[in-house]
Image (tube, rainbow, N blue to C red):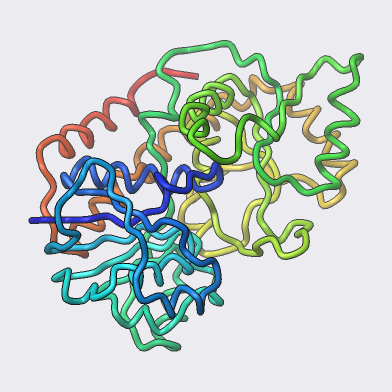
Length: 348
C-alpha cells in the first residue's frame, strides 16, 4: 500500500505544533509512508481553497506524488485546504483522510472537506458541526503524546518547583513572578519563553523541555477562556501540553477545561488541582502545595500510569488503523507492548 502523509511540520516547524507533527512522524515510521508538505502556502482559507497547484516538498523522495492513501495531519482546520496544492488530488489518491488537531476553528473549514473520504477531529461538538454544516461523516479522536519521550526513564531530583510553558494568563503569571522570583522566596519558578519558537532548533530543544518537566514538581496549565488575549484561540480543548506535564510526573495545577473532552480524558479523581479565580489567592495555594508536595506522590503516580495507558499516540494510531482500514506492522505491536512495561516502572 503506497501511503503519503501531508503535514507542515518539516517545512514550517513551530513549537506549539510539535506534538502534532510528532504524530505525523510516528505514522510515517509505522506505515512506511512518505511525508510531504506545501511550500509557502497562502494563509487565508479562501486563498488556500482557490489554489490551483503549489510547490510540494518531499524530503528523500523523487517519485510521483500519488498512491493508495493520503493522510492529512492538520494542525488546524485551515490545513485541510492544502490538498488543493496537489492539483488533481482525487485522481492521484484512492482515498484521502485527515485528523485535525485544532478542529474547534470553524472559520477555517470550507467545502474542500467534502473531498475527504473520512475526517477525524478532537471534540464531539466538532463532529456535529461537520455533519450539520457540510453533511460529511466525522469521528472524534483526542490529542495524544509520545510517552516514550516524556515519561521519566530514571528517578531524577525535582529541583524546579514550579514550571509554566506556553501561554499563561497575565494576572496569574504576574502574581507568580512577583512571589517566586523574589530572591528571599525559596521556590524556583521557570516559565516561558524557554528556547526557540520556530525553526530547526525546536526539534532539538524538545528534549530540553521534557527534561525540565521531569525535574519539575508543579506545572501550571489553564484553559483558553482564562483571560484570553486579542485574537488568540478560545476553546475548552485539552491539548497535548496537559498530557506532557502529567506524563512527566508533574502535579498539574491551574484552570481545567470545562468540557466533555476534559472529563473523558482526565477521567480519574484528582487528575488536576483547581486554583482560585483570584490570582493573588492562587499564589498562596501554589505555595501551600509546594510546602506539602510529598503528599501528592500517589496522585502523580496515578496520573503517569493513566496517561501511558490511555493517551499515547499509538492508541490513537490504533483507532486510525480501524477507521482507515490500514494494517500496521510488527514494530508497532512491539511498541504497544513496551508501553505496558513503561507503566510498571517505579519512577517519580
